[in-house]
Image (cartoon, rainbow, N blue to C red; front, side, top):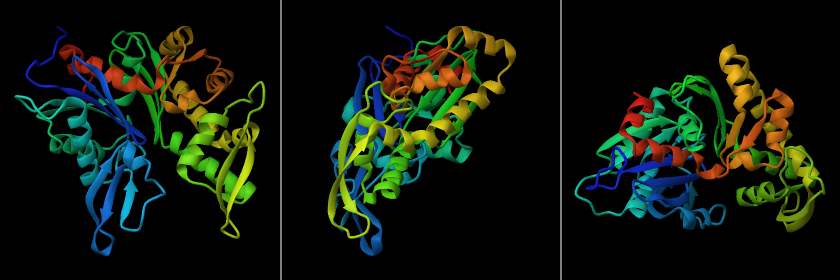
Length: 343
């Protein structure tokens, strides 16, 4: 049995993301992957009332709800923006993933961006406690991602991970279980979606929603041109006369829309490398850079990272689950958890 597993409780590791939440249950693996969205009723004066649904069902309501219901994301840029709703969402997900029964409350390991403030850290800690955690541990997302990617995090050699999530991109150089140099920027999947929305409005006079923008990004988005250009359509509302309309789009069009967020991510990688000690830079040149997170799947991104830095770059084999996989490894190994957990 792995160290740290408690047979009387179902301890959990949580990748609490801006776009999606993933839960790892000790001894079972990843048992839940749901959008980080909560649908709530509007109370008197617009106040937030009763929770209607959480996760996938709530996400389907984004941009489609009647006046008395609103779909909200309790996390913004990787940190909690609405404490009460985040607590309710976390409790629901943990119960769904691990079950409500147990002799003891679970230990909860939660991942946080490397750039969080003490106040933001405290918000995640208190939310996890309020959601039923008897003990709460926090781990920096880049550390968890590096563990999940199989990098030698505890060695004296340097490793570099770039985790492009929904709200933040985490860039980190890691050695001996700690962050040597890191950067956390508020440019990631959500900002790519916003760039697509703005581009289509400015160049095509069409208003589209978040889900349409994400669909376009997944199908036409690219950091370098496709070998064979791709084409697609999107429906929305005409910005001038308000009538429904459909337009055709090309991958080159969307690549242009994504140029600025991609450039900002590349700048963060360059700046982190520039601040890294020379010996660790040598290790990174030998080992390469690992990309993970949903945004890492943008076509050609690893190629532009190599062109910009001169360092070989690969995308993890399972980039969406990299962070929660590493968090689960720490949860099930007490010695490892004690070394990587934040104070």
